Image (cartoon, rainbow, N blue to C red; front, side):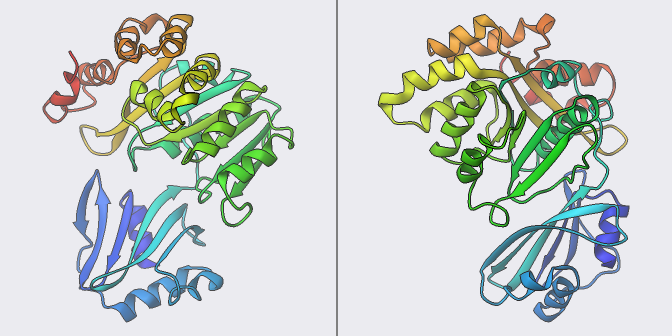
Length: 341
């Protein structure tokens, strides 16, 4: 409990407990040893886990090699995504801090186009990036904006549920894979009969989940989903490549019709401490939809570069803007700023 309190107090993103090593926290993307801490043994780590994990989960520590869940800890203004695993020295655990209060679009410094994206009635919006790039936080901010501004039904499918949403103007129902549903695709099939206006898919992991998400997007729902990709062009290729060769042309057509935007983000260090998202934003104009349909994916980057009046930006353009505003150090991100110019 003390280590979790320290993690929250230091605004650390992660806490690591590992046999034979002192506790470590990740602050501004750097691992740092907790002051005055000593190396942990397996008995100590297990006692720490027993004190915060639900009893039914603690009972599985001896029988399962990996455990993945999210927990709330009484008295702390944060939830934690927890992964417990075994390694050569013994048991280990990683705690990812998830603030209880959901930041707004404005507080995250996200572009104004995000407000317009929340007003779209149907289609697919992709939030992409590597693990730990802040995708869940961006999605939570979008969902919270809808929750504050519309009278709608929002259904989320997550593994596990991270940010907790209260019902404000919207009815919000959050389902956790493995706890409330067997799989993403099972939950998506059911979602089509549950009258949602908005569907959040925590991750499009396999062909069937991608297929059902595209179907939902085509049948009158706005679907938010995540991918582990590094650009809009890579995201299109990743979705199409999931399907067998004879379906690729059909899927390109479905994407051209239903895709509304792709947001790819990375977290960058701010001058003075903390991190913020830098993003590539592609909005699907008729011209971009035609490029997707005709498999001219290599032309997307140029379209994003010249689409600023539509709310688009490349990652390089966004980074240069953050440098101009003196929010980030240009020396840290020079390679990213000029990677494709």
